[in-house]
Image (cartoon, rainbow, N blue to C red; front, top):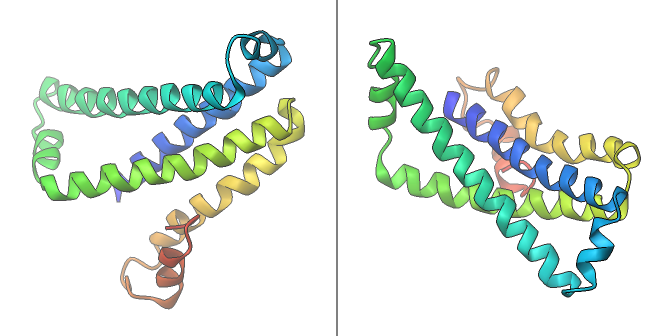
Length: 161
């Protein structure tokens, strides 16, 4: 469950960077200057790819930091926990993190382009993040019954999967 909380935290941070970045640039008129040298589509996909790479770098740094911290304090818990994760599970986590970043990142990108100022889009920002946080909040009460109909429903809906 701690891996789930960790990945959700990083997803929120990475996709939130997209929203904050576009709001800063649109309020400073930097976006208009950049659009004179390139197309809007190339600019959006370039920023999206760059922020995705920053998010991946954050994940790598956090995992390495956890392993180094565990080794520093003499606890092998962090190292053993990281070694107990199978490579196949890591592959699935990377795939689902990439797809969820693509989904939530494009939602943030659309929200940032629709509402150029942070205060206007902030209420909708919480509405976009609620489906991501709801299954995590309900995971603890339903941990004894993983095949509960509500959790199955959440796994079928893309925003909560």
